Image 1 (tube, rainbow, N blue to C red):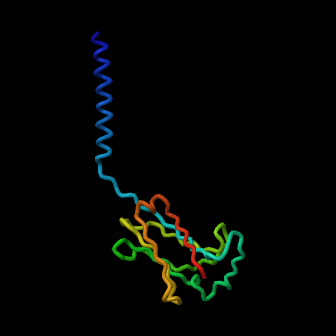
Image 2: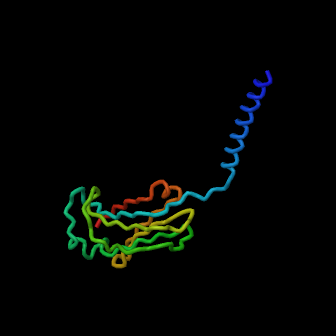
Image 3: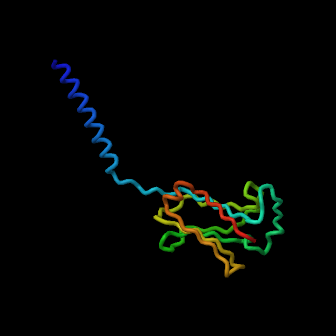
Length: 144
């Protein structure tokens, strides 16, 4: 009989210890989810998969020298880049890809696309850190 009671108390102790361990791990503050990198794919909305993407066609258009800026929720610029890679043809038509590695931590991010040659044209998109942590590849289709 004592061995049965000991086993029952042993099982209760194990269950209690497991419950305490779960509570302890959920009570520990965790770093917020955030993207480690961000890939921005800028594509010409008027093209389709397999399109021929002649760089000369894009000279002096919005795509020629587009600036991509990533800022935090308060408007501070975290990083930026100018589209310089040649246009490529892919599943989304003619596109350009810019990757930002080691993004600083922020609760929210705004991705802004602009071209100094087209001052009246700007595209801005806002995301939470959790949204970008879940999917850190953005596809932006813009009409020439």
